[in-house]
Length: 292
Ligand code: GUN
Image (cartoon, rainbow, N blue to C red; front, side, top):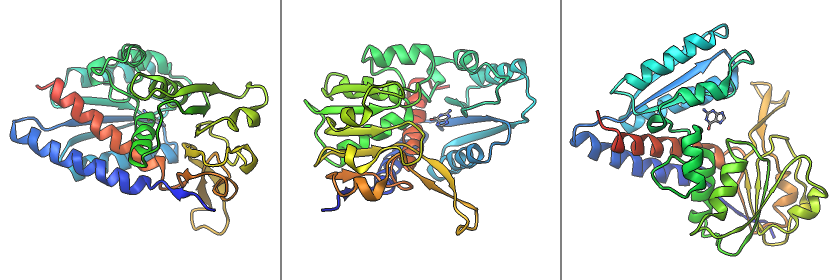
């Protein structure tokens, strides 16, 4: 029997509705939430994400600033931009789109962002707060979106075997912390490219989080019957039948896994819309705690 679809578009719309109401309350109290998005270089996919983030700010009544810097931007120039935004009282959240060009030391740029404005939750101080289960920190947007999808789909995490495939700092690692935290109470396995017998590990999962960035890596036979699958992969694959020449596909072979799972996110329309929605939530959190 096909799985229930976990509708990321509908859940994101609900979260954005909450954000719009919260932004209006904040505005009435004299604070307009402000987000700055910095992008270096001209990677087309990154530009699409950044444009969507800025457009969503406009729709919610946030102030936003898009700073598009050329690919040749130096580390010094990028750090100067971050310093200017750290000091700008109209900006509550700062995001530097990842990945930057290879000559940029991304870790140093992240460390330069004021942790109180780090709405991506990538600064070491916020990573530590997540590990410490301190709610004052910022939770990275994509894992936060995955947790909200599980909650909205009423998928129980307590006592569940959760397997995460992919150990990135943006998704896999924070996801492991969130699912194993008090309150979520899952038993977590953080798997990666060097995991021995990955199919067997995945077959243990009541909740499978696919975040490797390899199109179609996870096959139907890897799925425990009745599992919930969250597919974080947003991979561009060539498709001559499309006007753009490409289409988006997940890390999971949807048609195969759909036959075994109880619930699954589609790509597109699953995790993708949730990332922006949670970014807006984090910007509100920054605006509330960091008023001008
Ligand atoms: N690139 C892909 N996902 C993200 C994200 O959540 N934040 C930033 N800054 N860059 C990304």
